[in-house]
View 1 (spheres, rainbow, N blue to C red):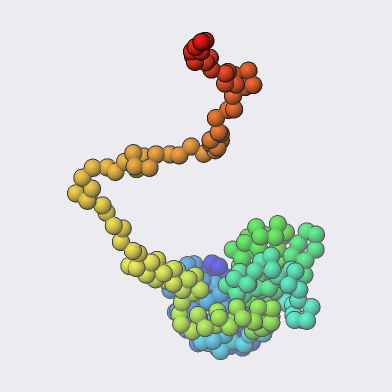
View 2 (cartoon, rainbow, N blue to C red; view 1 turned 180 degrees about the vertical axis):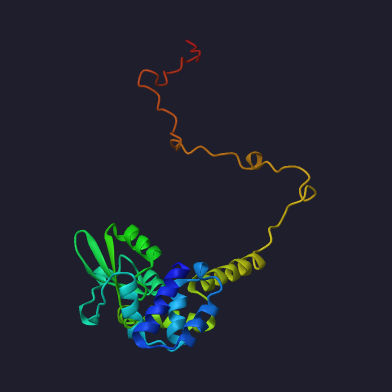
Length: 239
């Protein structure tokens, strides 16, 4: 958001709602570098710090960015349309999709001039984003109704002054540090532990897995080889 856009928003607030010029100058004094200032932060400061009403700012934003104002019916919101974008994008850019067709996806946005958010949604859905203005509190309530647990956690992180990504990185660093400090030391063997390498093959030769046949008794003699009668050497004496 360029500085001239900030000025245009302030001028319309002053002209349309009769806000004093003192307010106008006071806010301009804060915008020392408006070109680099995050647009959503600037708009939220108008509500929280300078007392601009949420609905008034929404109407001015719709006029500045040539779009319309939508009233969300939270009962008609669908997770099938919201989940492709996801909670993180909705919460970060203060938007929520409420209608989708074959070519486009319609987004209720606190800041309908956020081109960065439009590019991200288009890359995720492959559909043309149509940004319409919606009061900040209405967008936040709609996100909370679709993602109650995630919203509560994000509110807690906001109060801590850290983002979910920063907290996740801190926890990961602590886990890595703990694992490094408690990693078991490797035992290194010295050359003096064993004088000579031990040869296990000499003491326990590999046994053959083949089974040996059992020992058989000696074969019986054949019938032809039966013991023959021995010759008699007896001498007979006649007379």
